Length: 210
Image (tube, rainbow, N blue to C red):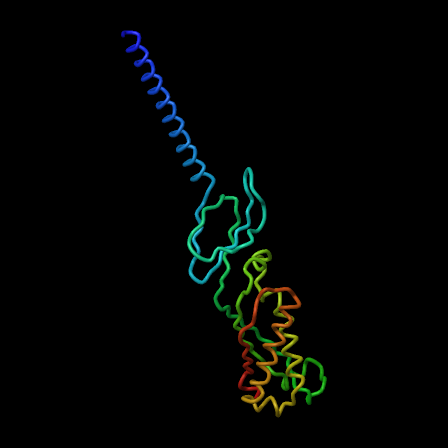
């Protein structure tokens, strides 16, 4: 009888020891996980109207590079080494001016003949269509340093197709030119591989030149 009791006590003692070891292991895992989370991880929240593109650069393991899907809502936890690129998916506003624009009936006088030049301001509304592609060249603004000179050339070409009298009939002229520039700008973006669509173009010459 005493042997049975002794054996039972030993079994209980072994079970207690096993539970203590298990508890210590679980506690160590929790502590280690907390350390890894706070030391190596970060939480990224996506603002309304924006998309987040994640470019992974894992510390130890995992695939490096751009994730195939942008995060558009909620939050996500990533390694601190992960590059986070926030993309505005709303409408983008840009404006540029060009002051050497002339009608086709004014000839090709030297640049110094400024009295017949048009000083033109162009307002653009656009939208990013593919945040993944855009994020991979996010060092550049979609317009500044990328398409601005091309768009200026297009405006000069467009004005050169009309006489000064046609340009002075601005309501009719602007309707035609805005539609033509919208198509031309989007064609230039497509050829350049820029994932942006121009939604609206409005030319606004300065009043004193009309």
